[in-house]
Length: 166
View 1: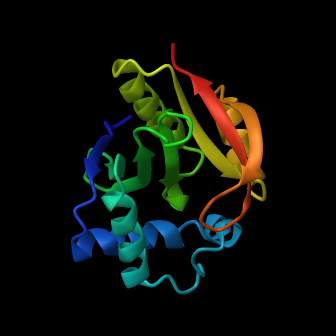
View 2: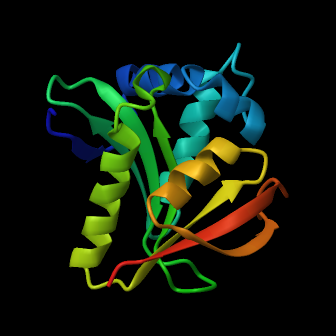
């Protein structure tokens, strides 16, 4: 398998177009999340949403690329959640054409290893209740359900998952 690299999103028009394509390749996720109409994803809104995320203290928006510099995914990471102190994966989205090829597993592993190297004991994320495929993916990687609650921004029902890193 080709190596994967994670680099901060620079918000160039070319990168934003790639990210819009990434979202468009995941219409099921777009429908489940309710943030974007998968038929018409406005680049300016995607850019504004990701800029807001990137400007939040402790947050990073990263592009995942393969050895040929093609975008394979997008990650939003939070170094320390203000409520529980744990790092969180806010989003891990793999290009739809690459589902079931191990990219999600590899990206999750890179994130886990990064926080493990930083001495963090655990990592968390929330999966939308209406996205059973995502829940199955994360639990297959050893993540465990610890709570159910609504997300703060959109009030969507979510399942909070935790993975011990030590």
